[in-house]
Image 1 (cartoon, rainbow, N blue to C red):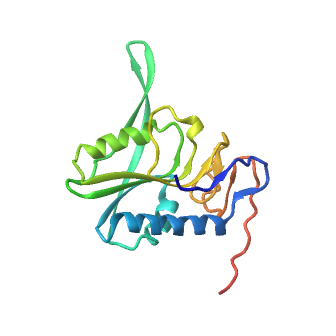
Image 2 (image 1 turned 180 degrees about the vertical axis):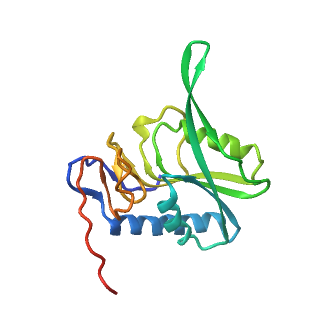
Length: 193
């Protein structure tokens, strides 16, 4: 098995993943995905709202034709005969029959949502169907799902903020680094090139 970056940092106030570290890892993932598809077109399905920054950076590192599709999840609490349960809904799925499909999401935790979406996408009978995530949290998995590609594996139970992921109050998506939800990430001014 290949060595993959891992982290187990939850020290508040520190970015666990710097912008440079994220960039290097995304670049490496792009090379790995490019090799896997060997010049074939890839239909990338991006989950909104969490996966858009990761997807934007990753698709620019994939050296083959890429077509993007976007899906947004809607989680609803449903009363089922006096028992409350949650249901996951997605908008219309793209037509992917015979295509190579790569589902991109920022975080894989329980895996329930991604497994559901992968099953829905699989109903279109794609040629191949793979999953890529920025952060893999296997300790929180509730289903037997592993990503085909991941940026970082973390044992942390923290909420991650930055690089497209928002804090509970909706802020922080614009931070270039990733830190735990308790960290106060200071924005540095961009340096001119």
